[in-house]
Structures are given as C-alpha cells and as structure tokens.
Length: 73
Image (cartoon, rainbow, N blue to C red; front, side, top):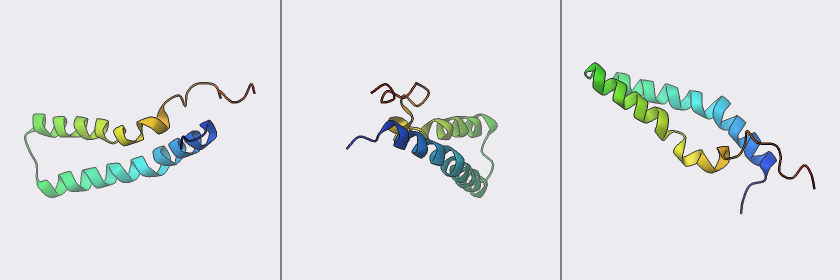
C-alpha cells in the first residue's frame, strides 16, 4: 500500500529530525571504535555512509518538494 502525500511528508520529517541525527551518532561512534584509518579511506567511508542512509527511504522522500497532488481534487 502506497503512503499518501501527507503521510510521506510526516515520515520524511521524522526521518530527518530524529533518524538522521541518530544515524550520525551511530556512524561516528562505530568509526571511533575502529581506530583512525588513512584520511582518504576515512573520507571515502563517510561519503559512502552519507549516501547509504537515504537509500532505504527513497520512496518516502520522492516528490516531497512538489505541491500536494491531492490538493486540487
């Protein structure tokens, strides 16, 4: 079942306000436990982690910046 536009907006807000900061804390904590890799590898890991977090939520964020498609009905 597809989420409505309003539900996707609410979930995207929850993901960005609560989920993303938690993800950042977990990622930095895990990186701190692993020790200090070379700077290029550390940068590569952080870039990859910065992209990977959004992939499972792609369907929630798609079209959120657009006008409400159900508003005109």
